[in-house]
Image 1 (spheres, rainbow, N blue to C red):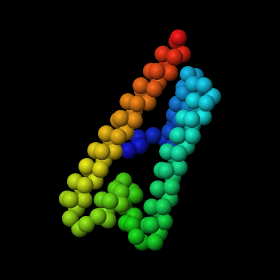
Image 2 (image 1 turned 90 degrees about the horizontal axis):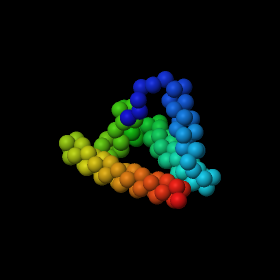
Image 3 (image 1 turned 120 degrees about the vertical axis):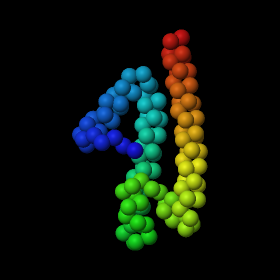
Image 4 (image 1 turned 60 degrees about the horizontal axis):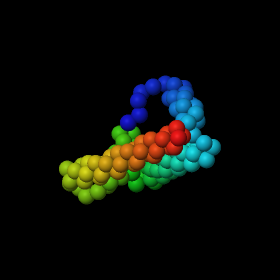
Length: 118
């Protein structure tokens, strides 16, 4: 969930993070990370836009995007408890995968720092 901050501050935080990341990376590393972040942004944008199309067609309830629920929770079977548990398990798996990715990126950063200091 995104924090409740003013839009300008939210945008400015991205600028600050970008400038912080510039200092310790080569141009190729900056390019690779920038492309990865753009891919993440494209996935989010594509998903949000397509969900808006589904709402426009009446195939997805409007509150599903306003409350953050995804299609598997909203349109699974009729038993909401099973859908909730399935969605929770899916979320747990996603969190675990993201944690592994963060650990791998942290290890890569450490390795890069070690190579720089040699």
